[in-house]
Image (cartoon, rainbow over all chains, first blue to last red; front, side, top):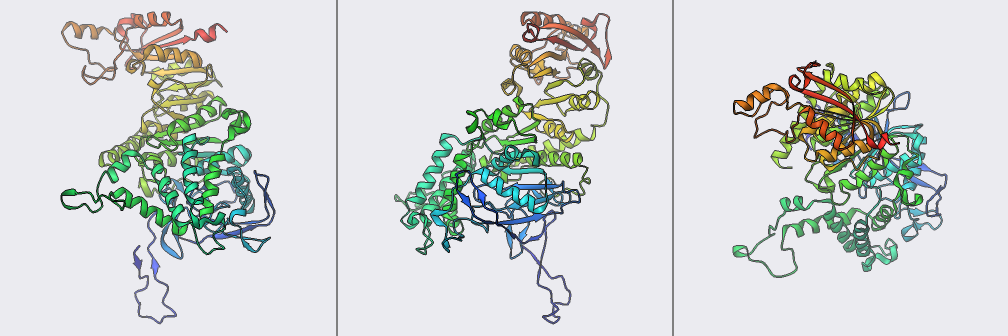
Length: 416
Length: 223
């Protein structure tokens, strides 16, 4: 990040000298500060449990218009947050996780759309979660925090929509688990969503998906520092387990080709003539990378949140209450759909998105489906493929046109 | 992303931009004829819908609910820009995404000759819709025969390719197509033939470069 002196008289008195400004790149929403919004009405959860009250950490970009019809909700996946776009005001190097997608002149154009990023309940970036204080005990919730489902998140988000006075979102959008929430919106609140944008997602996890989640959870739960989920009281965190969980997850986000290209069999510090070290320390680059990713993750992510969210992923299956009939589950949806998948995503491969497309076609629900031939596996939904961004941008431009929003003023970001 | 992939991706967006700039122009004579065979307020599937020209036209002129299938990135993007609902997939994979008799009409415009599984796609068309419409370059166009008599493969307006770079692997004449339609029990209801965007009525088998057929599905006909 480049600091700019916006005053030529930098030797002026300290009182008059403005704080050093930060350069705002074209297409960025600029510096952003999250807002904490409290909800006192108890939330009835799918598990039968009740969350007595909760707070949601929220960022918004752009302006809600007078008709309140230009709002877009962006739902996050496993390890992301409400910080979708822009630079955190208190740490400008902290750029939003979908900053390449959301901003003035970007695919989701904040010159025309009012975009909401929300941290889900159960998460660990400011919204009420297992590390928050349980009002009935005065101690962190820990293991006592209720189990959550995608539907619970949708219901909590619906109250956020009420808070902003939004009856109907122009679009609800997300990738991976975020896409499941978008799908959940189309089913749970069909009249409150105009367009449902589901990227790199799936109508339900496969046995293999659940298997990976379970390995990750066992890594956390069997860490001696886990203390049955109440590690906060012991002033520790199950860092090793969480780190292993993240390493496993990370592998599933990348494609085989991508890992081959990034790391191959490159050795970290080969001996003479490429000799191996014959031990269990880091031998290959890929090991070093995964360990680093795991350790970094374990310093900022909450282990109970990891358990909760992977479980919510496992439970997601709208067809479950319709004898496995996805088309029936989706028959209440009145939104128009955009689905995008990526050819090398083996976590949620194109065939899973096609199941959703097929169900929607069967219901004669309007649907557009793009299958992007991209090399980056599941992670592709966060990356800057121009075809992908052109699809999403074209789709949003149509939404803007249909709603009578002003025409796009600029093109920034991936397509600039 | 590798440099070639990045270039290809940017090229797709550039081609989409080009198509969008041309979107205002009127539609070709063969597409206009296809549109004339489609009932207002009906449901249409356009296979190989390109940039969505036909579906956008049908939507605007006939209030038709349409869906397109297209494989090429650039064309999918331009179709989305026109507000056409499009499913990105390779037609060779078949129409498994679509239910039987889900549409009133299904269109395959100037694509049949480039498909590997000719019979399969025609059967699939008959499965998903009551009426099928196909267009293809007429190999029986007389200069083609003349070219072959001179010892060279024909290269003409509708088939501007050399033998070694042509995507057209299943070329046929009008009579050839009619024989296949009979074999597959597709009842031909309409035929229109064109040469350079002008309709040809006299000696069409020789004089036309493009044939457009409409047929009724045996599935629907037996209902």
